Amino acid sequence: MFIVVGLVFRYMLRMPKPGAALLLCTPLIDLALLVATVIHLNGGAEADFTHGLAAIYIGASIAFGHSMIRWADERFAHRFAGGPPPRKKAKHGTEHARSERQAWLKHLLAWAIGCACLLGMILMVGDADRTEALLQVVRIWSIILGIDFLISFSYTLWPRKSKETV
Image 1 (tube, rainbow, N blue to C red):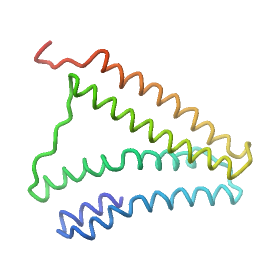
Image 2: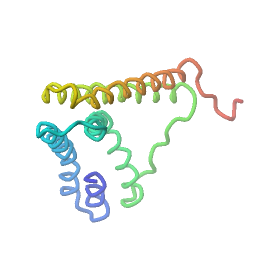
Image 3: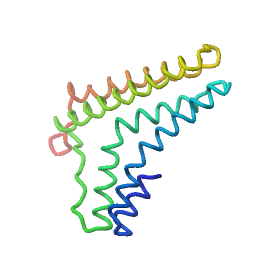
Image 4: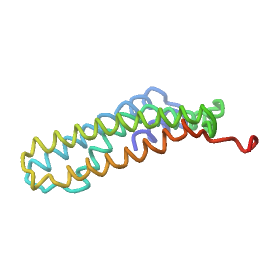
């Protein structure tokens, strides 16, 4: 939400400094979400998928945040400030394969950060029965990460061909 509001301030309202300040607030919101989750669990709540989702969000926000903001910024700048057209994503060949590998590495970083948060929450609560759902999130996310690895790196072995060369 802060990203959209920050970009609106930056481009539509032509207030770049408040827009940048709002964009910088995004990690603070992420931190507040994590703290609220830990407080809720320490208050006696039984963990469920939504608590795990907070950790996934934190990991994804840290790993993908900069590139997501850059992606949105390019589009807002083009649409509302006369900026150049956004860069097109490679759809075939070695550039596409490289892009897929880089995206997987960001996913790996998100997974590592998210799992560290999840395991930290499990240790802080100290009750395996109440935090089983968090461990289940780690298991499921690990499977998803493995599937993403197979798909992402398959383009290295079998690059997508352009329609012109087929």
